[in-house]
Image (cartoon, rainbow, N blue to C red):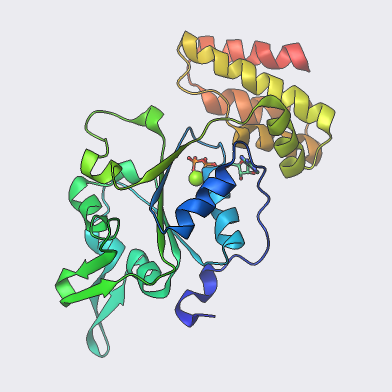
Length: 267
Ligand SMILES: Nc1ncnc2c1ncn2[C@@H]1O[C@H](COP(=O)(O)OP(=O)(O)OP(=O)(O)O)[C@@H](O)[C@H]1O
Ligand SMILES: [Mg+2]
C-alpha cells in the first residue's frame, strides 16, 4: 500500500447497479488510461460509479470538489511556510499523478479556464504534469487516470468546457435510471421494500415531467433515497416526502403545490 494515499483506498465494495454498460465502458477507458468525463443531472449515480470503479480496479480515489475560486495551485500544490522554512506540498491532483490514483474532479466546469489548462498535458499522449513553481515535470504513474464530472443542465455560456479540454476526454451520458432499476436502487439504498420504493420512483418520474412546466430539475435518485430512509426511520410517508422531496426542490409556491399533489396521489 502506498503510504501517501492510505486514506484514499476504498475498503468495501460500493453498491452500484449498472444501467447501460457503464462499468465495461469505464473499464475500457481505464485499460487505455484515457481520461473520462461523466455528464448528467445531480444525484443520478456519477460519484457512486467512480467509487465503485476505484474499488473494482483496486486504485485509490482522490476526489476534488471544484469551484470557481479554485486555482491551479489548489490542484497541483504550493510552497507553504512551516518550522523548517518553506516546503512543497503536493496538491490532490499531484498526489494522484505521482502515486497512481484515480483523480475525480467533481463539477469541473466550475473551475476557471486558466485552472483547467493544467490538466491538458496530463490528458493527452504526454501524460505529464508540470509543477512550474517547483520546476518539476512529473510523468504520470502508469496507473493514474483522470475522471471529471459535470451537470450540463447548469451550464451557462460563461461556464463551458473549451473544445480543447472536451476533446481530450471520453464521455458517458448519465441520466436517472429506468424505473425498474431505480426502484431496486432506492430499495437497496434506503433499506425499504420494493413496493414502497416503486411508489417513490413513480413520484420521482412524475416530478421529472414538471420540468416542462418550469421546474429546474426533477427529483433525483438521491432525493428518493432520502425520502425512503425517512420513512424507514419512522416518519410518516407524507411528511417524509415533504421533507425530502417537495420543499427542497423548489421555492415556487405553484410548483410546490404541484409536487405536493403528486405525493398526495400516491400516499
Ligand atoms: N446506479 C446506481 N447504483 C447504486 N446507487 C445509485 C445509483 N445511482 C444512484 N445511486 C444512489 O444515489 C445516490 C446519489 O448518487 P451520486 O452521489 O453518485 O450522484 P451524482 O450523480 O454524483 O450527483 P452530483 O452531481 O450531485 O454529485 C448515491 O449515493 C446512491 O445511493
Ligand atoms: Mg457526485
